[in-house]
Image (cartoon, rainbow, N blue to C red; front, side, top):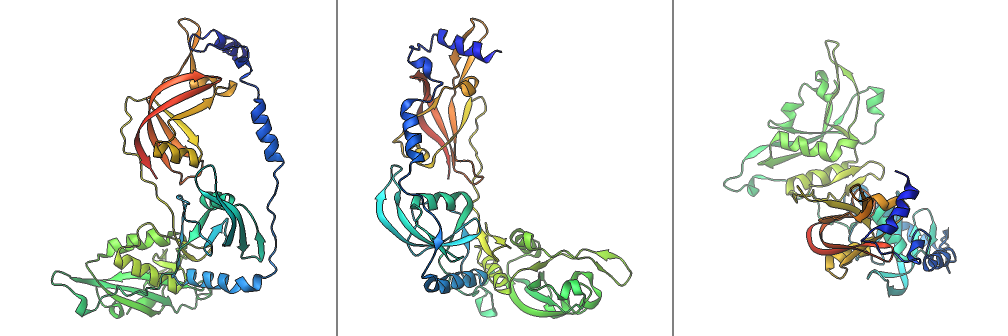
Length: 404
């Protein structure tokens, strides 16, 4: 179908009573051009510069790195960004940022706090970016650093901890290889993490002839008695968390057969302690290991949609965070889209019976916040669809499902 012809036919649409003024809907409106011009003439553009007093902040960054590697802190994805606070640390594209201060605090049009910040970066630079900009960068490509967890690994069991129905099911052990193989002995932070129903000493007695132990003696670094935990469940958890840190090496047994041992991981011992503690107290769910920053991180795992949309016509749209929140709160009841040449067939259709163009009708909108993979989404009922002044308006009803 000729697109230009379609655009001509739209003016004969009985639903779209378009005036001469509205015929200019495919041009950039004057008010929009004005806004675009204002954006180009921003009154202030934040620039990175040398942080003259970085020596004051250097120990703080060193402490953050140390506590992350010790498992006292971890990284967590942020979606609800109302809690950005002065003195807190964030990560943007692999670089640590201290939100040192917020000046000229105000509430922006999206209802969130904004202001000119002083952000200190761990490479010795600083910037006065807007809080909104920092927030956006952290949400899209970064993390927040959690507060320090002062608890030590205290959930390992001894005989006095056993309840009447508890049953000792084995031992979690951490081993260090004593292999002289250059590819093994040169690898720092290499540990085998396993589960044994027998004593660890008995389990490793034949290590020098067992490919599971790299055909070499091993040293017991740590051993913990556990209850009500089965080996398969433990192994699944370990592999889930440390999959990216698994050590890959080929060893040959006494009969010349090659093996690829599992359960060997390249990870700091303090992180191993933290992982085992979280497995035993049930808080490990959702954590993974970040090998680049050598710390635990907890990505946001969105719930999958369970709403049955069979038989429904659903339009998928991407919207801004502030608009999404307003729809969820019920303060925004209309979502609209400009009718353009590139979106003509998405929002309207040409009826072959009479050759006229009509609005497409949808039962619901599936709304996504932005384009990143961890985005929020919602399914919202459409109660009416109208055309007004060059745009299609979707009048919204109930929120059928919200995945945040």
